[in-house]
Amino acid sequence: MSNTITITETAQSHFANLLAQQADGTNIRVFVVNPGTQSAECGVSYCPPEAVEATDTEFPYEAFSAYVDELSLPFLEDAEIDYVTDKMGSQLTLKAPNAKMRKVSDDAPLLERVEYVIQTQVNPQLASHGGHLSLVKITDDGIALVQFGGGCNGCSMVDVTLKDGIEKQLLQEFSDELVAVKDATEHEQGAHSYYQ
Image (cartoon, rainbow, N blue to C red):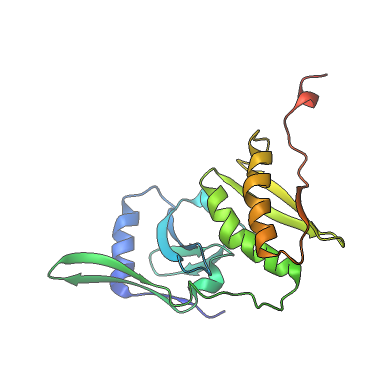
């Protein structure tokens, strides 16, 4: 597989110095926030071993590895991370020319397009609460069944979030194709947990 992310030697030694001060086994994560939208931004963070997901792609470098999550990967094609020193001082520069590119064509199957909007627009909003949403399926009569995970599971505000935010957003985006968005999650809270 071609290495899509270029980390220059100066940037590599900068990361190696930073990582030397972190716990053993810590690497870096490169990601895109709001990928495929005009507000897309590329970022880098520490990635301790327990934060590595099975779906991550690993880019090994000499002193460390860079991990990229599944969603960010296509948007980081041809990305370059450099560490530049000039008279103003030193700074890390991140260039991700494809971060704002829409990766789903208008004639892609409805499931793919809805999934894309959830991943690029809904999940970044939910991530601040430690939650995420996944699309389970779209029924023949145009109902998108979604599942909440992470911090959203069992949250009492989830119905409000779904009705006021997510459903409104998806129905607006897919007005001719979706009629409703319903929660397929069996929320792990409520009366059943009190009756033995």
